[in-house]
Amino acid sequence: MPPAICFEAPLVHARFRRREKRFLAEVDLPDGSRTWVHVPNSGALTGCLFPGMEVVLTADGRPGRKTAYTWRFCRVNGSWVSVDTTAPNRLLAAALLGPGLPGLAPPLQMRREVTLPHGGRLDFVVEQAGQLHFIEVKSITWVEAGVALFPDGVTSRGRRHLQELAALVRQGHTAWNIFVVQRQDARLMAPAQQVDPAYAQELAKVARAGVKLLALTTIIEPPQITLSGTIPVALTWAESHNRRH
Image (cartoon, rainbow, N blue to C red; front, side):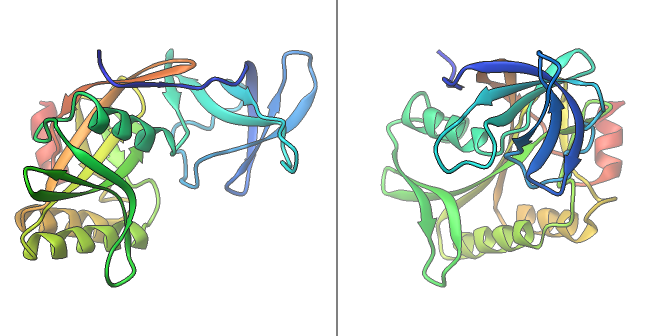
């Protein structure tokens, strides 16, 4: 079976009103009341912030929390999108401990949240037949005309991760930057040059240096998210335009 994760907390359907800063959003609950909910995503959430849109929350009223709900999903153009940036890592862990991924077949030994010698940190390291594979995972929620775009804001942290992956390749390891598209309408992944040209340049540079790029799509059926397949990665706008046509 394809790797999948499921949110166990009770689901609550609501209507989005507005986002406040990065981690708070105001919604209308089914009983007509309004409340603030936690947003588990620090990105811009481009294309996912329409007033009145349907959203799905989990009820998370644990002691010490400032909000009783967490925003997990929203409906965009009739399809569900997961906005939770923790979900891709959970999906990757399920895949690496189960059926594997393209280029990473089991048996695999996996460690999470790996600290590098100089102090940087990556999401996973996998050992396979004596070879170390270092993996950084990125979440994508932004899709335009079938193209999944990353990042949706300037990301010096994302560039640093790419540089760390390239350094590991130079040391003889295998390094992966894996993009998880948390929606079903993407046919291609490309860097958002218009948002962060430096990231786009760095992505192309590390790809030439041997860092492996993989873009995965998902099927979103609240409360479940399932890995569904791969899509091509284009490194320039021109390349993405040509592949779309």
